Length: 413
Ligand code: SF4
Ligand code: SF4
Image 1 (cartoon, helix red, strand yellow):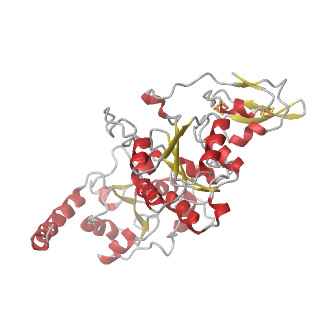
Image 2: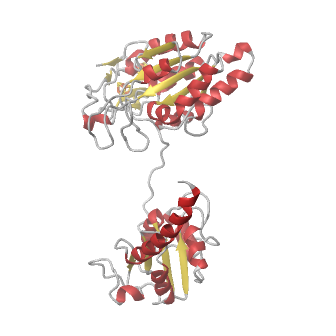
């Protein structure tokens, strides 16, 4: 917008903000819960909730919260009145003032920066916030409980402890064979943002750097430029299809333009898996699920000037190893595309689950070579005082990758 229009439009923006302020005061998803003075007066109590201030003296403590922090508050504060804000800008200042009036102390429980706290203080309400609630890291019920009631003073909440487990890729994920091979080849892997970032962790330990979306290609190229000749060919960039289309294309263009030789591996699983399997321009579907033009990633790479564009079967470790080894030894930029859909795309009938594989325990010698791919369907078991491996049929999707790793043919379809 040109400045002379912008000045006029600013008046409109201010008027609109005022209207929004009124809307925020009446927003139906913002609600007071648990017999606060407002709910008592008939103001937006949760239908059917009786509440009660049995555990706390009426009017002593009130809590203002929003988003995920609200869930933690509800888990640890059964009887404390809560104002749950579902629209946080503009703030419903009048509603907050009305709510706060009823309590001696009002806590603001929010994750990270004190956005609500500062805004509420700015309208003249004294609240307790970040002096008790940490401003870094995610909150959880324990942190909220300690912050509100003092360290170690437990409320009567259900305190079931869940087993800790590290995040890993899915059974049959088409990334497993790629990272297994990259690790085996001892390459420096500049990673990117997606499910595959998990390959930085055990048991894969295959990604060496990750910065932000699209940065992996540029990092690999930057390293290539400063390293000695013999080390240049030990670097690859790995990026997912969705991230490549979002912000990887410009990095690849830079490599071609600046006479680089970087090898880029594009993991094309036909979706944006990490954030919930959203479609993207090369998935062939719009975000509404309608069929659409499927942008061809290989053609984009060729159009950018990459002469060496190759495809690999991600379930064939031998082929992966051969092609990566060939490409990193070229004196030209190259792209290797691993095209196989995310195993969780079953709902769109893109992945046909194959029958589960089994391990013949009379043949398995417990060498554990198959565990190196990090497939969660492969489980270590004890049998007749021997450590062997079995396949969990509930998890295995029959991708066949592990067959190739068992040198004695103990894994069978
Ligand atoms: S075939 Fe092997 S690698 Fe594939 S899902 Fe089953 S156990 Fe995992
Ligand atoms: S690679 Fe084969 S022999 Fe070794 S543990 Fe796995 S199934 Fe058993």
